Amino acid sequence: MHQLHCFCYAACPVYGLTRSSPAPQPSRSPSATISISRDQGAKDRFPVLSQHDAIWGCTFVGECTRVCPKHVDPAGAIQQYKLTAALDWVKSVLLPWGGK
Image 1 (cartoon, helix red, strand yellow):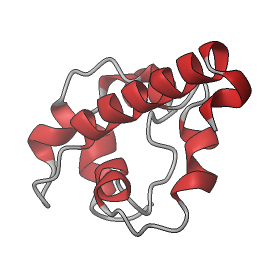
Image 2 (cartoon, rainbow, N blue to C red):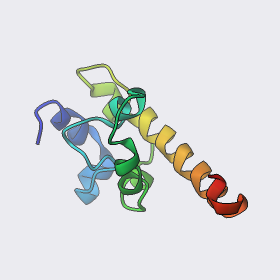
Image 3 (cartoon, one colour):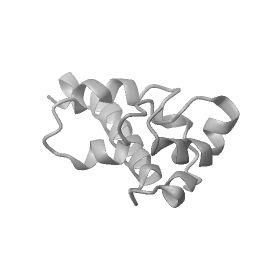
Image 4 (cartoon, rainbow, N blue to C red):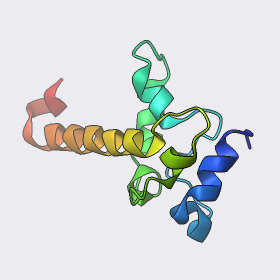
């Protein structure tokens, strides 16, 4: 596991109880992934992150953000991912052909 992410995982009560992380990519924080608009892998990661045992496990305690040595907001990024996933699902249900 990447050295910097040890702080985030150690502070996360969900990870402490389940050993399953709401952010399944320890090499890169979700907030970094969201904030980089030219990220070519975002479309590939989105289905993985939006699975039930990924971002939805985050209870938004925010300890990961509090202890982050890089001063990013992983808890906020996970919540943004939840919103994006929910909107994507609503579009797929309500709009013809998923709004595409």
